Picture (spheres, helix red, strand yellow):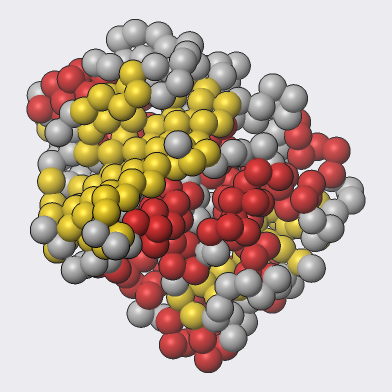
Length: 378
């Protein structure tokens, strides 16, 4: 079994580690720069792990890499997902990715027939959110019968928060800012609708020491679920979890224009406020030694046989000191790897379907449990 992981960043490295520790697959980890490997991958060099320097914009190089594998797991930025999906279908290899852009997932779905004809499966949205949270949400919908409401809450948080934002970057600050400034797709009265990010705050309680967190709308988490469940669910929404007070500060920063994308004159130069904000704030929110926690809850309310039904599923995963590896890497990168393994095993049907449509719930949850990530029914 030959696997290709595109992207040697945090999530791609975690995906490669999972493939190496949970399977006997040959793993090629590819990126523009692959020399700075995390410690947990170093022991596998010279064995089943091969490094490949590749520019994902080089169609010929991508084609050659795909020709030498049976499945590709893409942990590159979302704007590579569509062209690499097409290249994977052309090469006849299974493909999955972390998602990150709803319109691109819609575009990938247009390739369903081509993938089915080639006998390969394409699974977008295989990370944490979209990904794990959406798979759990689809299961909640199945269990509650007539679904009135489905709510997804997800957050990556520092275990030891520091003011003023009580937040640390475990993925990408620019990505987080996109979610804070992009309208969020939800379902209202059975149809897709949009709401403003950083709105509709509510308290969500988790076991101590997390305690009470705040939840608010952000973009991207539901991905294509509003269209897949249109007319089948009354209300559906995704909210990000943070420590209390975070949304108020970020809303003020956004409303003041400090994360705008339009350029402004600053003396003789023209700059984008967001670029300046990221350059100043990102280093202050990064601490490679800080331990994080991923908190996830999905709640479905409905009715079965005339009686109200509620299903609530929870995940709490913490920094792995032994690896070491962040909880965000585990929940995101491992989820991508599990999906790719299911594709190779023939568990996922050919064609293009997002993870919540194609990944079977029970085998997925069992695979998470083998990695120490527990899905708890509350």
